Amino acid sequence: MNLVKIFFKPFTTTLFLVSLVLTSCQTKTREADKAETLTSALELPDRPNILWLVTEDMGPYIPSFGDSTIVTPNLSRLAKEGVVYPNLFSTSGVCAPSRAAITTGMYPSSIGANHMRTTSYTEVTGLPSYGAVPPPEARMVSELLRMNGYYCSNNYKEDYQFEAPKTAWDESSPYAHWRNRDKNQPFFSIFNFTETHESGLFEPYGFRKIETRHYHAGDTTYTWETGRMTEQETTVHLPKDTEFSIPPYLPDTPEVHRDMWKTYNNIAEMDKQVGAVLKQLEEDGLLENTIIFFYGDHGGPLPREKRLIYDSGLNTPMIIRFPNKQYAGTKDDELLSFVDFAPTLLSLIGVNPPTHQQGQAFLGKYKSEKKRKYIHGAADRFDGFTDAIRAVRDDQFKYIRNYRPDQGYYLPVAYREKIPTMQQLLHLRDKGSLDSIQSLWFRDHKDPEELYDCKSDPYEVKNLAKDPDYREKLEELRTEMDRWLAAIGDRPDLQERELITRLWNGEESQPVTSEPVIDSSNDKITMSSTTEGASIGYKIIPENGKEPKVWSIYQEPFELPAETDITAQAFRIGFKPSKIVKPVINQR
Image 1 (cartoon, rainbow, N blue to C red):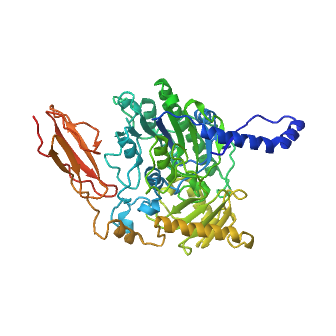
Image 2 (image 1 turned 90 degrees about the vertical axis):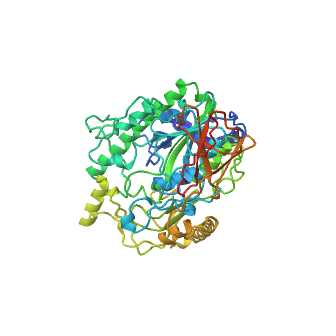
Image 3 (image 1 turned 120 degrees about the vertical axis):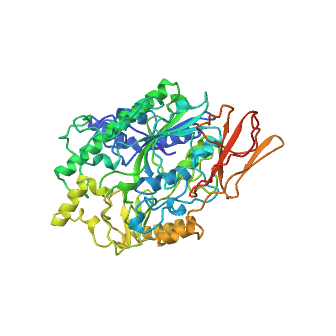
């Protein structure tokens, strides 16, 4: 980890400034040396608890990442006690493909998860409903943790571009919580915060009532209300007349100001909900046995942010708090991708990540010896509209390749057009009132290649691809993109219907997982499925016939307790589950 201490103390004298300049290089060297020492000295429990706090549709719009528009006391405290990661990038500018990458450790475009909403919009596309189909050895990372003794809970959004197997979670629901685990069992718990989702910008404005689940998580007697509060009921965390720094790709209008206010007001409410979960962790005495991750599922919610593979759509903030505040108040500038999450999670619990995972661990026992040099992104179908774009970025430059250059960038996604800012953009476009930067998104064609200096041009509006001064960098990133596409088997020019044919091995319908075969011999129960890579879930049913809620994962032969029955089902990601099998092994 390249850790640098964060200082916020103001500089008050010229003498101090001069002194700072003269000593800055020496200070940076000492801090870097100190960081390397700390990295090798990270002390973690053998089986640490891991808590993920995941928000939606959020760029680095919080004080810990340089934006002081809104106060976020809980996230600021987390940053003060942890490590800030400013260079985390999603693999896509939208949630479901990104979550597929997070949970499998594989690029969405390598497993058929790159098209958004493949189980809907079938009448528009003329395609069958389908899901991603990873290789047979692939598992959701939560299932791998369950197989290693962890209690895994998800509260409560899934959305992976495939249906989660029943073996993936001990519990996935609005009631899911680490508090439902066995005593002293290590846990991996996810809490998803939806307040910052782009739909939070729709009119009429108001917070989701269901967000109160974070105050009552684990309490199965509590019933959440559905729908939204009115704007009058909604807490105002930020004065409505606050002045905002409007990005140049958006017009400076009252409608945009209002949506910017909503964006920050939603973030403040999300911070409040984060605080509720952290309070529960402290109340349970688990803070110093738990590694806490906070991150967003991709970049911001506004037009020309979500769904695009500019940094505004891919870059999202991450904070990690280690037990006992190790590395407190530091920053790690390492390039990180969502495909790195699954191998890192396994590495943190001492499990060597499987070789099929395409990411690399950035923490833990199996941390990669080499830091990531590039991150990669993709954009394909969104709802009923298809494009094909790929991107590669190093620590300064981004290269974008457009496989449909004769098609414009803007896609008329109906869901996005519910945002007032989007409506305002379209209105001004039709009037011819957008400036040269705001008009870029609405061109009727794209450049085949784009190259941006993300440091000097953070909004990515000045294409350098034809500038001879950047030819060497262009060639470097072209070559890296070609290498990556070949390595993961990505075919951006592949028609979606042909993709489905490949995922289904030439069959006309979604494959079905073979039923588990259960054998009882030598006082042992063994299970198998002829479907390669199938996971088998089972339940042991006691004499009273009350079936457990949780599916156990079959790993090895076991003894079936007397006076019990068993039921089983087989799963493979992207396949339909098998029928539930209830063999005749009645021991009563």
